[in-house]
Amino acid sequence: MIIHNNKISDNRWHGFRMEYSSNSDITRNYVSNNHGFGLYLWESSSTNISENTIKQNFWDGINLGDYCENNNLYHNNLIDNNLDNAYDKWGNIWDDGYPSGGNYWDDYTGEDNDNDGIGDTPYVIPGEKSIDNYPLMKTFGSPSNPTITGPIYGKPGIRYNYSALSFDPDDDNISYFFDWGDGTNSDWTSFVQSGTEIYVSYTWKNIGTYEIKVKAKDVYELESDWSTLEMIVPKNKTYKFDLSNIFQILIKLFE
Image (tube, rainbow, N blue to C red; front, top):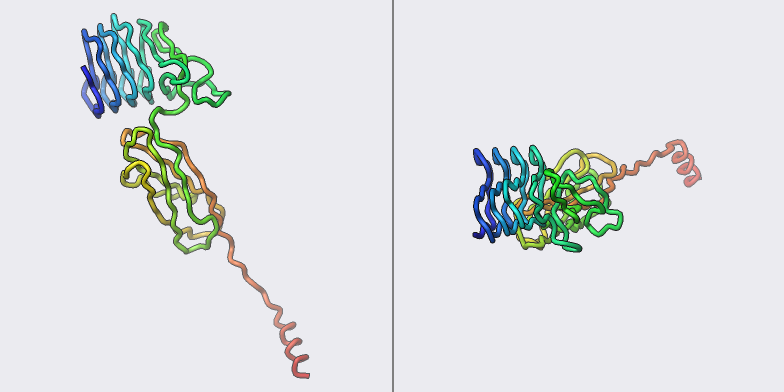
């Protein structure tokens, strides 16, 4: 059985339930806001579960029920599920080794002191029989941090143009979000092809130094980190003239 590239959301019960199955592939699905488990397996084995985003489900994100053994789960993003992000009491395999890595857990509290993108300590799966030895420090498959270009020095009341460019590792379409640093933002743009440069413009009304921030997300709602650019809108120079000095200079010119 192959379950690939689906959006599974807002079901009254589980997002997906599989029983008495083996040698299946569950890949690249977006599973969210279901009123039970996101993915629920029962007496299923030798299943590959990878590259799925499983978020904000009412119970566990992934629940491996009785007699679920020898299943491989890696490169999944488990985010903000209401009970546990996952539950497994049967000792399944939750990573793809090093350096490929395991899964992204939004409740992982470990560090990455060597900056290899993989947590230094394992993530213990509730159920106490399984661990993710190589938890990912950021979501798997998210777009690259955008490159942002445009002016860094300007004047109040003038509209300035900026561009952003990001690439998605799966070539998914991308949307961009701009924060202009003055309490306003662009909201998410329309989706464009990965690697397509987009253009926006903005006008600052007041003087100040503003941190422009932009991030990207793909169609599976995987987001990049912020990229930043500083914009300086200085105070206009004003000049004060001493009229008495001007009159004295004029008098001397006509003497």
